[in-house]
Amino acid sequence: MRVRPISPDRLVAELTGRLARTEASGRLRVAVDGPPAAGPDALAAALVDPLRAAGRPALHVRAADFLRPASVRLEQGRTNPDAYYEGWLDEPGLRREVLDPAGPGGTGRVLPSLWDADADRASRAPYQDLPAGGVVLVSGALLLGGTLAFDVAVHLVLSPAALARRTDPAWRWTLPAFARYADEVDPASFADVVVRADDPRHPALVEPA
Image 1 (spheres, one colour):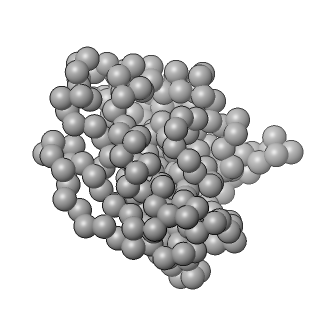
Image 2: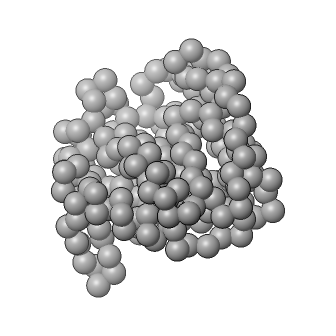
């Protein structure tokens, strides 16, 4: 294993090049996985315009816009790490509205947002048509190792100390969920791209030796 330091801009450029060269049946489904403190949403958003410039239509979808309603999500309390790990994300909704339409034989008709968690109601977002050859970037936490199908998985990893330091104090109750994810799923062991993100100004790519 080799750890290669890289600038944030260079990381975006290298990921763009890799994704632009990757073919898939229909459209390319990409996970940008990591705890909120690692900035998966920001990285996915930064890839959209470069991919479009490279000739690959791109759409960014946040997993945070596919949460279950509060009545289900918070049934075991507002700060239950096991519930956060197992039941906050509406995986069936994300599959039905995003990953299946973008997958082999899919229509390309993708819903970019299903649920407004702040208002606790349907987001009423319009569907968008992602053409063949397009890329859908799904960003968020705890995306890998479950029922969600991706063609490329990018995983942003933080050391436990960095995760604790960079997590908003109001969300530190989620730390056991990320420890469980690292232990039970170990996404860094199988993701296509692994990025160490302890310092957002100085990320590093983890590459085979």
